[in-house]
Image (cartoon, rainbow, N blue to C red; front, side, top):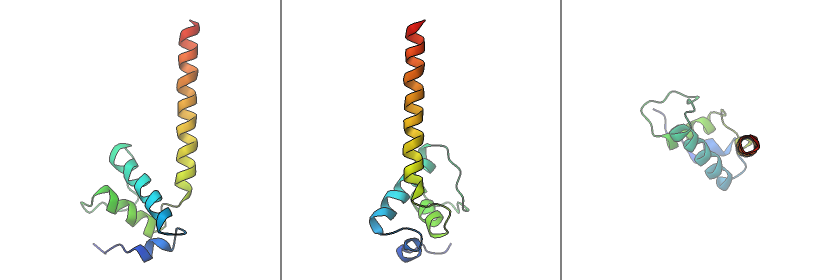
Length: 88
C-alpha cells in the first residue's frame, strides 16, 4: 500500500481545511452510508480510504455541495410524507 500524503491530496482540493471537510464527509459515507469505495480497500480504515480517493481524484470538494442538496431533498420528502399521512 502506498502512503497517502497531504501534498497528494492538495492537488485536488484548495487547502488543508477543505481536505479535512471532504475526507471526513467521505469517510462517514463509507463507514455508515453504505457507499462503496472507489479505490481498492486493502483493509484500510474509512478515513484512509477517503484520503486515497481524494489523492487519486475520485472525490472532489463538490461532494460537500451535492450531499447538502441530497440531505435537503430527503428531509423535504420526509416532511411531505408526514403531511400526506396527516391529511389522510
